[in-house]
Length: 187
Image 1 (cartoon, rainbow, N blue to C red):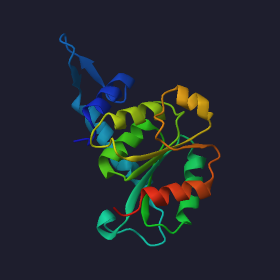
Image 2: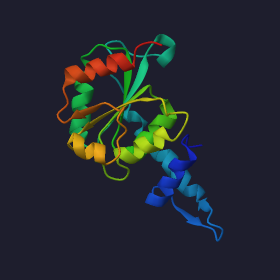
Image 3: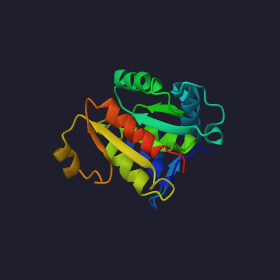
């Protein structure tokens, strides 16, 4: 119904995004009202999807358009990325999220080809979100890059996998574009 993994549901229950209780046996019981409320919030928020291509995408992968999800808790940064990427003229649909929880929902809904994420965000940070994705076989191979205000040594010590490209804020748009072009090449 929500389109996310079992682990994501567990994390949402633990953080209070979904209201639930535990049985004596330790099983979670989630109220249907809480699920319906989350689904309705997602429907209202779907307007946050924008297309960052020179030509409108009509049909996604069927016409060669890939999907790129960018995650940052700073609305100004999200808008900056959107404006910059729109000028690239590349055939991809840009999807935006403001934290790890929202990103996991959008990943379940839209199955993006690439994720670019901040790390230091409220709710679910980028580290936890990436660990959740990498532990799920359906998303373990997703192209991921990180843009963070944290220094690279701190990021490495906090457990970011070494194979994930790291960009310090402010990110070099030329380097970022090169990475996106390479990651979204047709298979």
